[in-house]
Each structure stands twice: as structure tokens, then as C-alpha cells.
Image (cartoon, rainbow, N blue to C red; front, side, top):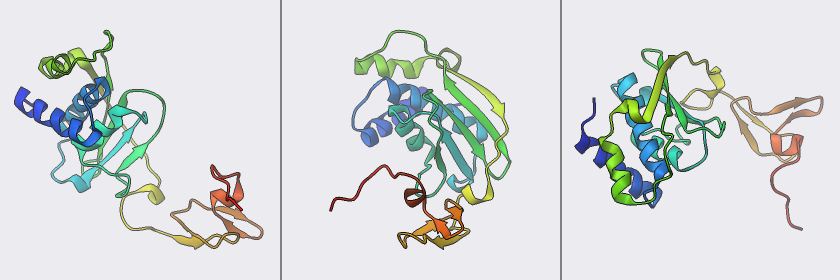
Length: 182
């Protein structure tokens, strides 16, 4: 179990990474600390974390867990909830941890730091879960690389759309989030 000094150190690291201290950082740090405590990995390479929001708490969870999008160990499942699932690949043990805080939004840094003193049960809930992740979404080197028949860009790990004219990247197969400027 983490002690107050460790929790405050993690909170400071979260603040440094994120750029400011806020409610999402404090609760995200507690979610991350509890999740890592529950899965007890020997190395960061054993950990995959699914964050359930694209807000401040996600930065705290990735800071505490050491996971990264670029290493494919951080997965975003944007359910708009302050929660994350921590999965130890070596033991296949997974725990989902969510915020249980129902109080007022806190803005003062001293009060946010004081949340690190609360017992786990006052701020987070946790339950053991099972996780299934397709092989193509696992961490590590790309398992397959194809070239988009329309734009010629490479598409990794079965993210292409198969068509009679060949594989297409999702940007070519569907309207992309961007449009080229002439």
C-alpha cells in the first residue's frame, strides 16, 4: 500500500507532466496508484492500461503507470468516465479502478494535496475484471503492414478496410477528420 509521501510524490510528477494541478490530476493519480498496486507488475513492459476519458485524469494515469500510446500500452476507450483498467500481461490479472468521489469540485492546490491523505475507499472503487485484446492491438512491433491502395500510406496492424480494389486506410475508406487544402 502506498504511503502519503509516495502519493504526494506521484501527484507532483503528475502536475509536472500535465502542467497544472487540478481535480482530475488528484483523482487520476489515486486511480493510477491503486491500479498499479493491485496488478503489481515487475516491469512496465507487463502493463497495459485502458483509460476511459480523454481529460486530465488520463495524464495522471499514464504518468503513474508508465504507459504510453506510442508503446501501445495505453489504450483510450473514451466512455467519458474517470476510470481505468490496469492489466498485467504476465499474470493476466486485471483490475478496473474508478473515481468514487462525489463531493464538490476542488480548485485549491492545498485541498487537492489533502486528498492524498484520504483512504482509498473514500476516493476510488476497484473490482477485478477480465480483458480481451486482439493480437493486432497488443504492444510490440507491428504484426502486419499494408499499403493503402488510394493514398499509398502504410497502415499498421489490421487497421485497413479491405475493398475489391485493395486495402484502404480509414482516411480514404471513410471521410477523414481532415481535408487537404488545395
